[in-house]
Amino acid sequence: MWKRWALLVPLALAGAAWFYLIILPWPVLLRWREPGRTSLMELRLDQARERDEPFELRREWVPLDRLSPNLRRAVILAEDGNFFEHRGIDWEALGEELNYRGDEDFSFLDPSDVAALARALDYYRSNREKIRGRSTITQQVAKNLYFGPERSLLRKLDEFVVAKRLEWFLPKDRILEIYLNVAEFGPGIFGAEAAARHYFGRSATSLSRGQAAALAATLPHPLTSNPRTRPAEMRWRQQRILGRMGGGGR
Image: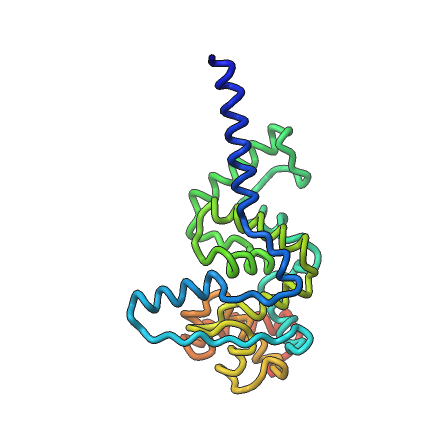
């Protein structure tokens, strides 16, 4: 009897894990089709309804080749400098964030690697509030499209899985195009085109270096620090981004 349970329990757990992975989103059609309302957009609409506040959702899709090269460069430098090198997850950056001390070639068969992973997870639990997560652009696309801003280990695992799928099915330029068109830039403002017109009165096609850096600097805290709300904090990040771009503020 016990031998049967010893066999059935692992099989049931493995089956549940496979089922869970299968039902997570498979973003195959995004290779050709624009996404509709994202999970984050729906969340903001629900929040406005709960507060009984007016809410206008502003967004306009613009192909990547029509977006300012300044904006593309500023966002990559600000959000994910290794975007074109990694395959969805920047393990090196994440390891630094979580104080991981295992080998670069991780293996569950290596007890020292498993122990290092356990210590990193414990570090995450103890320092959750101050950990940024080092999310790649691909992970942020997964989060915005399907999951919203909830923070938990399970949600992060979901994000990892879907980020890998995005990298399987979509080229890098398509992932960047989706990100720049669905990212939140302020209350009700989604996508670079809506943000450029709202903050600067011009299309995202013609953003200057300074304006592109300002939008990139808005991404970490779009609701509380943008070119119109507490702009001093945004400007500090903007200057850092301009420094990485190697140019002045224009």
